[in-house]
Length: 259
Image (cartoon, rainbow, N blue to C red; front, top):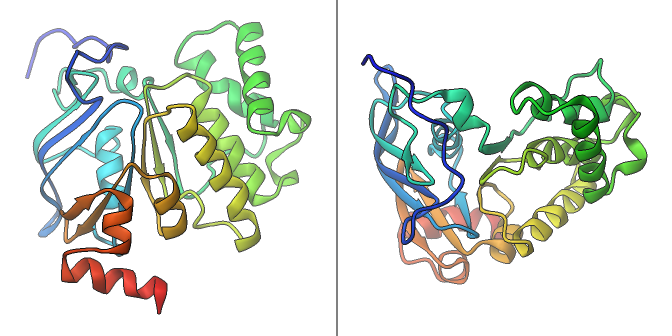
């Protein structure tokens, strides 16, 4: 499609609209269908947790929302704008979305403060002084102000993941996407990251979180979605889906965590 690039994702959510709308999205890799006519709405200030077995489509869904993968069919809207429109500037969309991966993806040759200032400076064109002030404040927010001049390999895994979350938050995104952010951590480090995400929920941060941490999901999720073969098989409040699931597939999946 030709024509001028569509404008960046707006900051204001139209009245009555979800912040994120995924409408009948399909994504396949070759003959393997990963997302199969999947739909999902996420209201502003809500936390939706995605659960399901590996390969169920959780990570692919997050990557499609952030335009790291191109959908084959369907529509994704963020703050009322169709981001799957091919005319949309993908970098402008990503500037309004914070994404944190399983791996920390920090630049090892840069100090922590410099890792966090990259997005404000390069994407949002913030001046160096202001970017460093924002980054320093965000590192204080995640409890790592004293580590600003450290290199990533001088930090624990939990600290590195908190830096990655600070890097995503420093641009004040409208939406946070978190993909199994504790899976690479030693068990004793998981709690500090989950505690931080709980604080973000309390502050009203809109999040879509893929996780295998069922206790965390039960604690912070406004809604839980169980994905199976690229579809949302069951969706509802955390207490209902995680404690009294209706679908046999959901029950079977959750038995892995209670048996």
